[in-house]
Image (cartoon, rainbow, N blue to C red; front, side):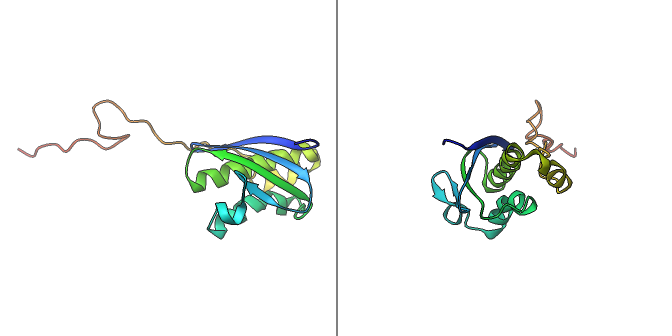
Length: 129
């Protein structure tokens, strides 16, 4: 995309590359409309939040390529990528986006399985006698 701003966002196992281009407000994820990709309105609202905070709704087209993780992780990754792309458009939005908590990467990840255990923390049942 020419004259576009690009940024990357991650959450859990999901990684999103987001392009922001001047336009009419279309949002496409993996070449599909946002309403087709995310069936639940919660995820759509989550993605729109950076644009709403920066007061840029309807002024930019968003194109996102996301892979890995589930729906929540993907929506979170797109949200972070979009917030970072908005900063490239105009760094003055940093204070607004930071206050809304949209520039902080969620560090929570799946905990690894440990040796001798059944899962990350679940232990094998011990015999009573």
